[in-house]
Length: 85
Image 1 (cartoon, rainbow, N blue to C red):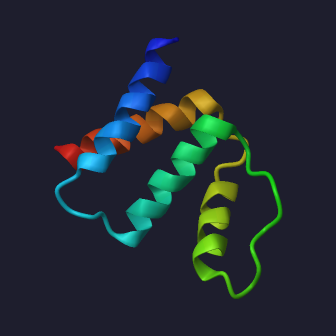
Image 2: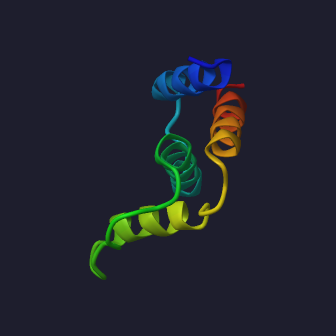
């Protein structure tokens, strides 16, 4: 396992221990960066019109299309470290 992958997985664990819940925009960034880093570009059907949360998550992830997994992992790690500071 690479150091980046290990740090990414550690950041995913660390984010669970945040003292305060981040705002919704930050949560969407975390979700999208995690999905892009772990799965790559968005796939699957877009959620239905009335699934507001699912649609927001899908759109946030879709905006990262074309971002390499490694870049997304590093941005996720950086964001988690920023939130923990």
